[in-house]
Amino acid sequence: MKSTLRFLIAAFLLSGTYSLMAQDGTEEKPVDKPVKNPFESTYLIDQQTVMLPTKGTLEMIIHHRFGVTGNGTSDLWGIYAPSNIRLGMNYSFHDRFQLQLGTTKFKKFQDVGYKVGIIQQTRSGSIPVSVTWYGNVAVDARDEAVFGAEYEFSHRLSYFNQLIISRKFSESISVQVAPSFSHFNNTEVGYQNRYVGLSFAGRARISPQTSIVFNYDTPIEIDGLLIKGAAGIDGTFENTTLPKANIGLGVEISTSTHAFHIFVASSQGILPQETMVYNQNDFFDGGMLFGFNLTRLWNW
Image 1 (cartoon, rainbow, N blue to C red):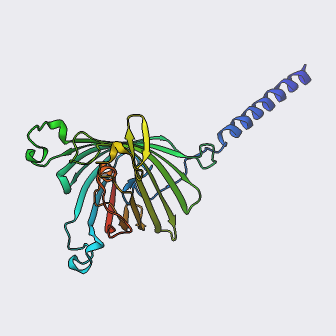
Image 2 (cartoon, one colour):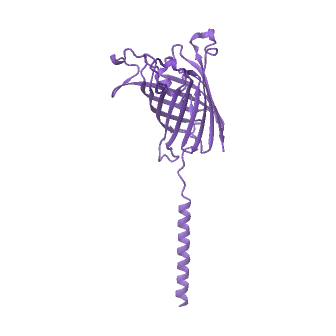
Image 3 (cartoon, rainbow, N blue to C red):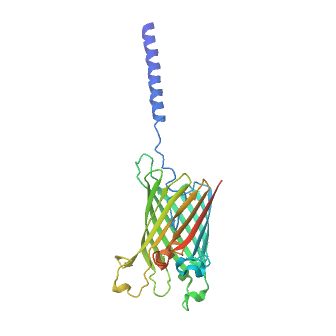
């Protein structure tokens, strides 16, 4: 009887020990976390990135674009020319949702935007890319006379939507591609009011705080269901002023709360729909300009 009791007690203790070991093994299983900081800022020259600040973060950004360099010394390569400026305030209500407000000097654009994080690239590679959706609505707040005799408030509105897909290849290299759609309810004579676009951007880190950055935005024309390259020639668009691609190249200097970009680019417009529809500056033919972005984060 005693030997039987000893056997039952030993069996119970062993089973408990095995159960605890099994539980410990489950708890210690590593969590597949998202990759850290595929980009250092929510902006990259003229583009939004997949980055979203954590919940409770207030972000302020200043965009500044000087005039084109093509006039040479007459306006000190665009430094003395009329410049375009945008002031923006963004707030993260959730780790995956940010609301944006901004005001722009040219055309007195007042914009409301949002970013939604859809998926995040993981460190193990089980999810190979990050995906974020960005959209905005802008109001052209200039005087009614700008819009002509048949003025309606809807003529002031423009829209932009974009799906941003990025991959962090290493601690130094991150790249993203972003198809987009731009639409103006009313455009200047000679301009098409809607474009599909495609954007590319990336950064190459050269030190803990410094990276080389680039962006490229190219519009694509739409005729019904037919999509044609912006450089193509088609009778339907023979009277349309075709937008030119926006090219940007610069340097990013970042800390935990700041990001500073100084660059050369070809779009003086700051809102992405204005770049896609109206840009007439040729980067390689006097249309290059200097610009900078400054971002500051506060977290509560």
